[in-house]
Every structure is written in structure tokens, then in C-alpha cells.
Amino acid sequence: MDVREIPVAKITEVVRRLCIEANTILGDDAVAALEASLAVEESPVGRDIFRQLLRNAEIARTEGIPLCQDTGVVVVFLEIGQDVHLTGGDLEAAVNEGVRQGYRDGCLRASTLDPLTRKNFGDNTPAVIHTRLVRGDRVKVALAPKGFGSENMSQVALFPPSHGIEGIKKFVVGRVDAAGPNPCPPVVVGVGIGGTMEKAALLSKQSLLRDLGRRHPDPAVARLELELLEDINNLGIGPQGLGGRITALDVHVETYPTHIASIPVAVNLQCHCARHKEAVI
Amino acid sequence: MSESIRIRPPLSDDTVVRLAAGDRVLISGIIYSARDAAHQRLVEQIRENRPLPVELDGQIIYYVGPTPPKPGMPIGAAGPTTSYRMDPYAPILIERGLKGMIGKGLRGDAVIEAMKRHKAVYFAATGGAGALISKTIQRAEVVAYEDLGTEAIRRLEVEAFPAIVVVDAHGNDLYREGRLKYRRG
Image (tube, rainbow over all chains, first blue to last red; front, side, top):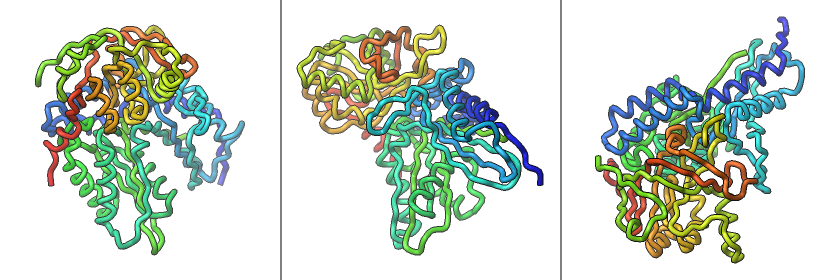
């Protein structure tokens, strides 16, 4: 098997482009979800909010203005083929250079800072980078700028097995209920079940990369997603928390085997933007 | 839907007490941006009895940290940030004469008590509509804490900025009422 050489500068270029696109172009899946929600929302204020969000997406796309002023911390999922040889520099430095250029050239907000001194770095680096080695000779870059109005409302819990699926549902729905208007509903709810504490959190984040409206391939998990979506929309929180039928646009669940002693569950909330873009090099 | 009420700061107590949870407003004139770090500094200055960089009496603070403007524009995306993070500071500013806050999300009991006592109002703007809202901002000028970047205090000249009264000066809360109306099961 030949080794394919990819200069890391190529990764910088892709990350730069994806940063700008993710922050200014609302995905077709999110636009479709907003339109479908506008059709079923009963609250007049709620319908007005769906119209505002659709108009917002239109302005952002045509004028290149970010959808939201919180252009997030950049979360990057890299899948690197085992037959790839990355050349010309350090991989993580190349990703961060792409973030620096994208946030500078796209007039995006610099939000990252030192957690203790609170001093802003001014260029929105570093990204949070998750790297996996996979088969093949390609590099897949999935990029999701994560806003913190919704991130702050997210949570991980480790339950004893006796809590069962009902306990999982109660926790997820309870988290959305407690978050109320804070994460800018309509939200997308990412749920990770299983693994360890950090694995559950990572699964919940990864689940947000899935397009809205796409169900999990396992029918049992897909059913759980729909049950959670119904329970969440019965909360009545509604668009922006002002009351209404649509609190969540979708619920995505990802699972992983876990220990006989535990049910790790993570809920990662995401606002309607559900920003995620990907490219394969 | 009811027609929007047009308001222009500085707000008098008379204007504030007439606004009711659920009212839609269009704000024109001058409002000030401030979020986490600027609130911390304002309150420090009040506690140390130092003069403030902006007079708060009758004014509205908008919880926002905008994106940098594109060339030729006054400001970038400028939607509201989540308000509860300003809760530890808001009562002190309200006591100092602040009449309005624009943000999104729940407020704590101490803030609502201060709003009732000193007559102030809490508005929500649409979170996630940063590009749309930027169109109502005609001018933006940093007036304090420039070193904070996006968190600096900006004097914003707005025209028909759309918001909704969520918590009024009588303590009525649209978040609570709206949710109850549509709750099932």
C-alpha cells in the first residue's frame, strides 16, 4: 500500500474555509427544520421567532455576517487515514493556523481565553481537536464552532444501572427543562450514553455533527430519540422559551458499551444553528 | 399579534411601569453594550466609589459581545447573550438607576426583586438572530474598557431594535407564563 502525502498547509486551508462557512451558512438541514417548525408552531410569538431565524439565515448567507455573534470555540474532529503521511509541519499547529486565519478573515469573534486569568487570546485559538486514526488514505475534517449559551447548559451524570432507560429519559428531559430559555431554543439535543465519563461527553458532542432529521441506524436508539423529542416538546418551553410547541428541532443519541456498574449519560445542548461543516482531503 | 410599543431611552419610571410582560417593543436611540467582564468592572468601580465611564440613570444595557464589523459596517453580528451570568451584578446597577436590560434567558430572584423595588424592566431579544439584529444598529462606538475587545462597553445607536418584555417592573415573567400555556402531560 502506497503512502499518500498531504501537506499540513492543505489542512490549514480547509479549516480556514470551514470556519467561515460554518459561521455564516446555516445548513440545509437546519433551514428545513426551521421551516417545518414554522408550519406546526401554534404560538404566534413562536412563529414570529421562526420567521426571524429564517430571515437571519438569509442575511448571514447573502452578506457573510455570522449567524450569531457567539462564533464559538472551534471543535475539530479529524479522521486521519492510516496510509496518510502528513508533511510540512505540526498537525495541531496547522489546524490552529486555519482557525486564526478563518476568524480573522471572516470577521468572526475571538472568544477563547485563559480559564484562570480570563485574558482573551484575540484569535480564537486553540481549537479543541479530537483525532482518530482510520483505514484509508484520506483526511476527514469535521468542524463545529460551539456556542457557549448552550454549552453552559450541558451536563454529564453517572447513574447506577437501576435507573434504566426511564432514568436516562428523565435526566435528558430534565436538563432541557432546567435550561429553559437559556440555550436559545429551539435546541438540538445531543445525548451520549455509555462508555466512561469523558466518552459519554464526547459521544454527545459527536451526535451534534449528524444532520437534523436523520435517525440513528439502530431502531431501538432511533425510537429513544423520537420518544425524547416528544417528551421535550411537551415541556412547552417553545422558541426562545416564550412558550410554544417546538422546544427541540431534534434529538440525537449515540451509544457505546459501558461498565456493569454504571450508565454514563451526557447531554450536550446546541442552539438552532447546529453549525457543522465537513470536508474530505 | 399586538402592535409594538416604541420606546426611547432614557426611560422614566412612568414608562417602565406601563410596560407589561409580553409587550413587544421597538427601541430607538442610545443603548449600551456590556457583558461579563464589563459588569465586573462597573461593579468594582461602584464599590470603590469611583466615577463610572457611562451614566446609567434611565439607560438600557444590552448584553452583547458583537463580532468585528465587516469593512464599511458599524458592527458585526450582535444578538443577545445569556443574562443569568450578569445576575450577580445587575441589582447593583439597577440601584444605580439602570432602567432596562436586554438579553435572553432566566433571571434570578434577587434581580427581579431589585427590578420591582427600583422600577426596571427586562427585555429579551431573539438569541441566534445576530445578523438580523445587526441591521437595527446604525452606529457603534467603544466608550469604555477598550482592552476587553468584544466585551468593551459600546454606545450603540439603534433604530427600531425589536425586543419583548419578559419580566416587567411588577415581577410578571413571560417565561413562566408562556411555558405553562403550552405544557402537555
